[in-house]
Amino acid sequence: MSPTHPRHPPAPPAPTRREWLRCLSLFGLTLVSVFFSYGWWWGGGDPLADGEAAWGSAQFALGLMGILGAHEAGHYIVARRHGMDQTLPFFIPFPLAFGTLGAIIRLRTPPRTRSALLEMGAAGPLAGFAVAIVVLALGLADTTPHAMPELTLPWPPPAPEEPGWFVAVLNAVLEPIVGIFGEPEPGFPLTIMANPPLMDGLGWLVLGAPPGRYDELSPLGLAGWAGCFLTAMNLLPIGQLDGGHVLRAIAPRLANRVAVVGLVVVAVGGWFLWEGWTVWAFLLWMMGAWRGLPAAALAPPSLRAKVVAGFILATFIACFMPAPIELERVPFEELRFRTPDGASISPDEVRNWWESSEQAG
Image (cartoon, rainbow, N blue to C red; front, side):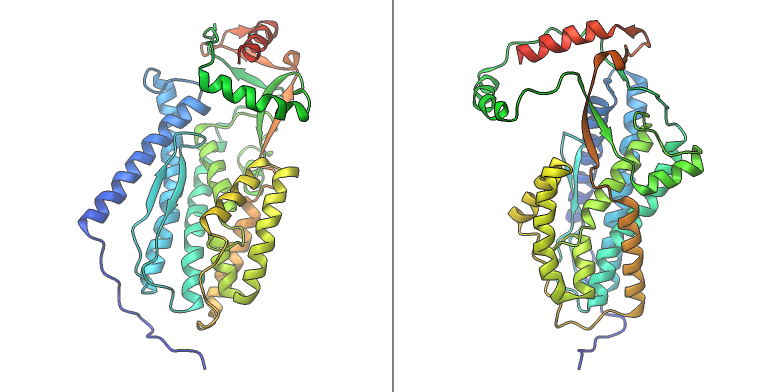
């Protein structure tokens, strides 16, 4: 016989003022990190000196942090409704890529039923996904179409500096390893971001067609893309990822085997699809996050929880991209280069600068 639990479990203790201060401080630091990461890595401008760059960075930061904030709030609120005591979210600033590694919530008490585990795990992705739809729909309206790649570069570029001793040693170590794979293909390296199915669908509604391969997303559009990307990674059915919680609540014994197989598949996927999958698999293994919470002895999930699991599957399909980021080497003659002021730059000038930079590095 399954254990019984009160229909309305006692509410866990409220967070202390110190916990709120820590949560809000980390949220603020992460917001700042996301703001500057977009300006310096994606926007191509200085948000401290350029008003347009600052506005783009603000849109991206508010869009992405809105998605992450909704995600963590969904986890927190639903977990408390099920009587689970947990910390407030710890947002993690990271001054590269999108400016954050997401956030974590630590459970102080385990789930009382498999329904509680499933709904707690599903609430975050569903809440974040709902906000991502709004952010992406608003952002796609400002997509800039490009039939061919067009890049904005600061020009003239700064003169290449002599590498420091650390970079020199690192290059000496990596050079024979890189040589095994041959010389890199000629051309300018261009980062291509795949369209998640949600973006394709919203593209038909907002633009009349999905964004093209070389189209330039607005800051809000990129924030929506990043929200889909992070949601899909978190919904992989592995261990303590949200997708792992959902699968464990539905089939706790099957979840252990799926977690091991899934970790291997994700790691191998880095060789054939996108290198980031291997990094993600390594991080999950190092943190022990591929091991899920114990749930086999808990009461089985309710019909409502199973319906929620169906929404989670649909969310994963709408967000998942087998190869989310691709590096394409484009011949310089097939690229358009412009300065931040809109002036054209000759491809030959860019090629000469790029080749001299590579030799200096």
